[in-house]
Image 1 (cartoon, rainbow, N blue to C red):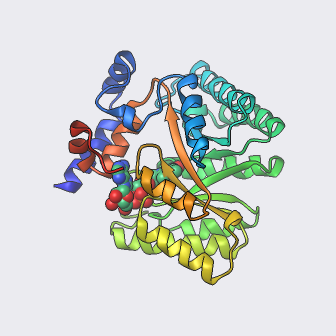
Image 2 (spheres, protein in one colour):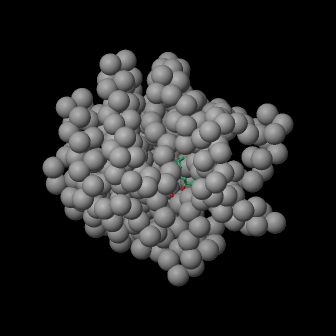
Image 3 (cartoon, protein in one colour):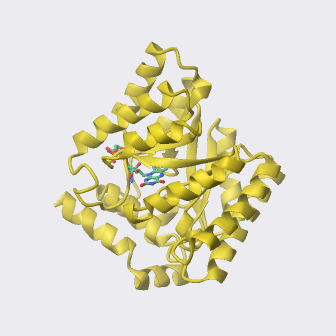
Length: 305
Ligand code: FAD
């Protein structure tokens, strides 16, 4: 039943008609719980609140199904405006983005050109940019573009998904570029040909990737709400004398807020991933897919904090 609901929400996330309707009617269905608002101003207000509590932030301007060059360029402009807003308001915040929203499905050249525009501004302002990882079909292109950018920019990083069989090799390969990686379980529906179908294998691989990344001397962003993985990381860094500034925990806005604050109190760096924008529907559906119980919680307005 849980798997069927998961598949249903992942299917709904890709539905273009619902996506269009959601844009038209604005934040609804309880999405406000996971999305900071529809405008940059809304998001900047949320970053300030998070910073005041000792939490860092990373902003994601939501955008799905970017279909033409103009839309991709507009998405890049949104990212640049977000960078300028964060710098202006002196927020402890960086940027997360998806290459498909920069035009990857239109052409790699367009995507790279948009990325260079964003990276030039980010470099000037001293702000880090994280390239989110999307589904397996985009993995090679995403890694290629990341490696190309990494040759010029120090302030760029990407994401590796623990559900993929190949990820340990990717972590090793990217260590040669001293890559700052966010490590996650993985949010998309992938075939058993490329990804572990069993959650226990994903969790074990996640731990392995955390160890590899830190053993290689690279910065790790451990992005999970899973307390077992968080406890594993705390224990492992302690045993291996890894300083707290060599890694951070990351969680999504609206999920496990109390745990985020507890980790800050314990002296860990914690960053909250804060999405905003009109295009909230696909993101929201993927969050419901991760935990279909959220549907009931959202409806009752009593989700676990
Ligand atoms: P799970 O085993 O799914 O969950 C562990 C526990 O966390 C659950 O029992 C529950 O208590 C809580 N929990 C988890 N999800 C939810 C939820 N939606 N609502 C309420 N409680 C929940 N994936 C990608 O593929 N590419 C990315 O670039 C990417 N970036 C991410 C960035 C951040 C900061 C985070 C936190 C996640 C990102 N993800 C990304 C998503 C990730 O891959 C997982 O799908 C997601 O984090 C859920 O897995 P989990 O590690 O929290 O563990």
